[in-house]
Structure formats: C-alpha cells, structure tokens
Amino acid sequence: MGVSYRFLFDQMVREEWRMHSRMFGGRRFALFPAFLTLLAGGTATFFAVAGASESTLLAGLHVVVALVGLQVGSIGLVGRDALENLLGDTTLLIYAARTLPVSQRRLLLVFVVKDVAYYAVLFIAPLVVGTLPLVVLGGLALGRVPILLVTAWLAFAFGVGLSLSLVGLATRSRAATVAVLGAVAAGAVLRPDLLVAVTPYGLFQQTTPGRVAAALLGPVALGAVGMALFSFDRRTPARTAANQFRALHRRLGNHDPQGLLAKSLLDVARSSGGLWKVLFSQGLVFGVIAVLLLYIPEIVPVRPSPGLTLSTVLALGAFTTYNWLCQFEDEAFFGTYPIDLEAVFRAKLLGYLLVGAPAGLFYLALGVGVFGLGTVLLGAAVYLPVSVYVFGVTAYVAGLRPTELLFDTPVFALFSVAMMAVLLPLVVLAIAYPLDPALVAALSVGIALVAGGVGYALYRRAADKWHRRARRGTL
Image 1 (cartoon, helix red, strand yellow):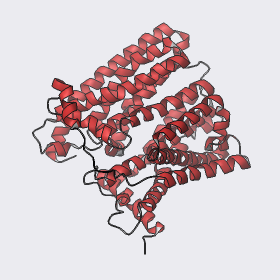
Image 2: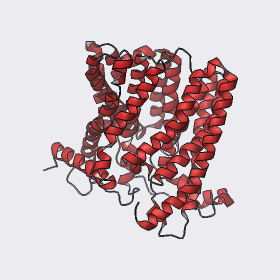
Image 3: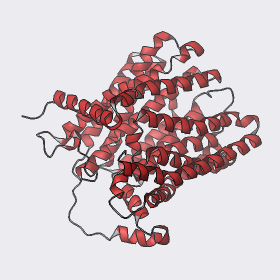
Image 4: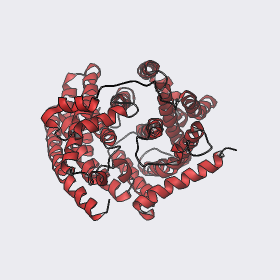
C-alpha cells in the first residue's frame, strides 16, 4: 500500500514550517507575511501618490506573483539535481522516493500543490492586503479585493504550472521548448490582448464564463502537462568525458589560483538547466518588462525610459545568478579547508560577472531594436554598477546561503530596504527621463556608480563578517 496524498501533503506542510521556523526562529519567520504586507502597502501608496494608474498597478501585482510562481515551479530542476545527490545532505520528503513506498511523480505532484497552498498564504495574501491603500488613494473598490485575492492566487498557480510544463518539456526536447517559448513571445507581441484574456488577470478585468474557465483550467492544464512530460530518470549510457575542471582551471589561469571560480562555474553548468537557465530567467524579466512598456498604459502621465527601466529590473533579477552560484555552498563547509572566505567571495563575484552580466547586456542589446539606441546605452551604463551593488548587498546580508537567509524577516527587511534605496530613485528618474534627458542621464549614472562603489565595499567586508559568524557558530 502506497503513501496517501493527504498524508504526504500534511507532512510536507509541517516540514516546510519546521524547516523555516527552526532556521530563523518561529516568531521571526511568522513576521514575514506582516513585513510583506507593509512593503506592498508602502509601494502601492508611493505609486498612487505619484499618480499611478490603479489598473496598471494591479496588472503589475499579477505579473509579480506569476513570476514568483515561475520561480517556485522551477522545483523540477532542483528535484532532478537532488535525485542525483547533488545537494549534499539536504533530505526533504520530495527526495525520498528511494526510501518510501511512493512514486517520484506522486511526491512531485504533492510538493507542487503544497507549494501553491503554502506560498499563497505566506506571500500572495500579504501582497494583496498591501493593495488596500488603493481603496483610499486609487480607484480600487473594496468589494473587488476578494476577487483580486482569488485571481492573484490563480496567477501564482499559473506561473507554477507554466514553469513546471516548460521544465517537463525541456526534459524531453530542448528544441520543442524553444519553439513553445517563441510562440508565446510572438503571441505577446502580436496579440497581447488575447494572451491576457486567458490569464487570471483577464478574469480580474472582466468576469465572463470563458475567462473563469480559462483562469481555473489554465494552471491545472499546464501543471498536468508538466507532470506528464517530466522525466525523472536522467541515467545515460556509460561514457568518458574530459576533465572539465582541469581544462577550465587552466584556462582561467592566474584569475583562479585555487580553482574556486572554476568550481562555481561548473556548479551552475552541471546543474539542471545549465548556463541556459541564467539566460532564460533574465529573458522572462526582459519579456515581461518589454511588454509592459510597449502595451500597458504608463503608470504616470510621462512614459518611463525603457533602457533605464530595463537595466534596473535586470540588475535586480541578477540576484538569481548569485543564488545559482551559491546553491551548493555554505560558510561552514569551507571552514574545513585551508581556504579563506575572501577567496570564495572573490570567485563568486567573478563568476557573477562572467555568467550574469553578459545575460543582462544581451537583453539590453536586444532592446535596441525595440526601444532605440540612446536610451539603451544609458541602461547599459547603469546596469553593471547596479549589478555589483546587488551582489555586494546580497553577499553581505545573506552570505553563501541567499535562498535560506532571505526567508529570515530581519534579513529580508534589510535586503529590501537596501534595494529600494537605489532602485526607487532610478525608477523615479526613468519616469522623469522625457522631461530632461541629459540631467536624468547624468543623475542616473551618478547614482549607479555610487551604488556600485557601495556594493563593492560591502563585498569586501562580507568575507570578514561571515568568517566571524562561522567561528562563533552563529550561521
């Protein structure tokens, strides 16, 4: 007799809460939704006072929660790595098919359903509650808030289903995955109204039987396709391969004396999705922002600078690159070897610049054909220093475990404040760009350079901070 769905769901929910509450302390983790509500409320108030369109802000909310769903749905990539023992001593129920009388497909299905339910309460509901200032300052009717909550949940589930279906398809055929992504991109450019109509945001815009069916069945259908296509068995015939580490280490030469940079690059390349997942994740960000800039009405009466907007969001999106570079690391591990953490963080910075920066610059170059050369050149000048700022802040506040520590409410609050201190001024300048392009360009580059200097200084202090914490046993 196999393990029931209900039992697995209950145990996975308990496992999720126990893992995070023990890691950060129950009260600190429980405060996370409250902080998200305050953050969302402050953002909604800021844009509403600035003259933002209520419809565009709510569209942005649906985009944000869908992107969070895409990130959560990437469990397919992580799950496949775990089945190959690439995650060290990480042992969650989803990885227990070899020791429990339950199939891998059932474990993955229950895990995805748990994630949708768990994060709907932990993340999505607080974000929706944070839109309440729009009831007073904007045109959001109080009676529409429950509908907004439902469609936001569905948008999150849509993102999870889309990500899972793409990962499942990628396990079968990369060419087919590229073709599907091309078709979706073409639909977004040629008929964005039709594409929006079949998403949960289309249901929020207008409640019709067709849109209700599309919003409800879309996430389920995408998830079912992903589950059906997903290939768990990655075993290949025995083969020989060249020593990639030695070749890469030799090529890097004096830039990588201890092989730490080569290890970091190979960690990303050998994990599921390879280096392509960096380009893919930034491509999602680029696609969403480009469509918003092209087809959704401006949030203020002045159209924002496309290049400055793209560079700011792409720089923030580079946080995922840092995540992947550190996915198999922790500070205590390096304490058992004659390796200074300073060298480790240096390798992460070089890897970040080698892997993440070209992806962002590639999409900025792609934006030249859509938005023109001048504004994109400004974006390129801002992108690199702001990316260094994102790296420095992340390294200093989260060390080598960014995914785990950013669930800690005080750490996440510090990270959010640090990001907003630079990103909000750049967003405001992007909106003000048409009023005085020369002045705005000078101010934007100046802010970016200062931020880059601060990020570099934080990066230099990160190793010492985490070395002290490792010695005190307070990691």
